[in-house]
Image 1 (cartoon, rainbow, N blue to C red):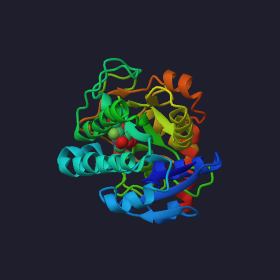
Image 2 (image 1 turned 45 degrees about the vertical axis):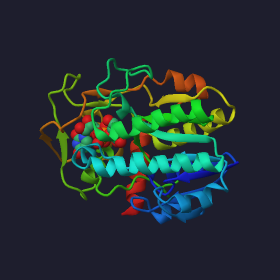
Image 3 (image 1 turned 180 degrees about the vertical axis):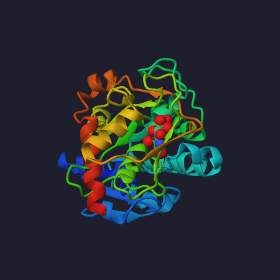
Image 4 (image 1 turned 90 degrees about the horizontal axis):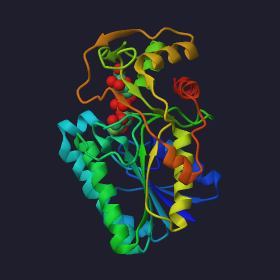
Length: 320
Ligand code: UFG
């Protein structure tokens, strides 16, 4: 089976392409390289193009049996300031991608969704049945595509899996690919950069949350555990099962302070830091109930927070 990996030159997409190859799939990467990097696609066929370009997409879609879609903007704060950018790419262009798949006869679609579709959760851990009421344009854009996939499945038989990631982190064990955002806003790479003396001091956004140590709690999932789940989800989609909407997290939350302590332990260096006010829009705790993904996919996240931090550290040192 040949899989068109849209956004395959980005962080999560590049790990998924390698997982697909390990499992014997053929891969074509389609990426506009706006936030992706050519070297993350090394060893794969790369077609440089935009998902907003239906003619270019149709050409390559003809050669594909399934689509994995990773090509989205993913900064919550930016989506609040510039919703137009988010709706244009994550909704309008995503719909072009979906329609191109439909028109070309491709009926298997794996979608990068987010725990941001839940908004402020009713309960933590969060099950898939939690109402989807996003509180920012980024989450709204992901929910739109989830809804479109559900409608296209009912109307046109588009088989799909919407995979709701919690906090993707870490890097491939090889040290060859990893996280590379411009600008970087995520906790683990910023804490590592601060420890390496390369970045600014880490700002701890809020210490007065209703959590055990007052800092926000998140569910960090290793990017290769995510990548494996994509391959398993594609297998399910291929089997013509029910449409899938699955949380991908570990079920274990860690506070910002616990992450900092882990970074200090792994690097053997202090993380210079200061206490800063809360960052707008950050909920106190987001942790997945991922039992369903484990049951349906026969999947289990295998890598710990220590492995997340140590692989991210190896990646950062190799890039230095
Ligand atoms: N944090 C800091 N200092 C920093 C950066 C982050 O204290 O410099 C804290 C944040 O306040 C948060 C935690 O570390 O509590 C994790 O923050 P990240 O920015 O690493 O990740 P988010 O939880 O904000 O974002 C993740 C995904 C998004 C997704 C979002 C859904 O990366 O794509 O969850 O809420 F949209």
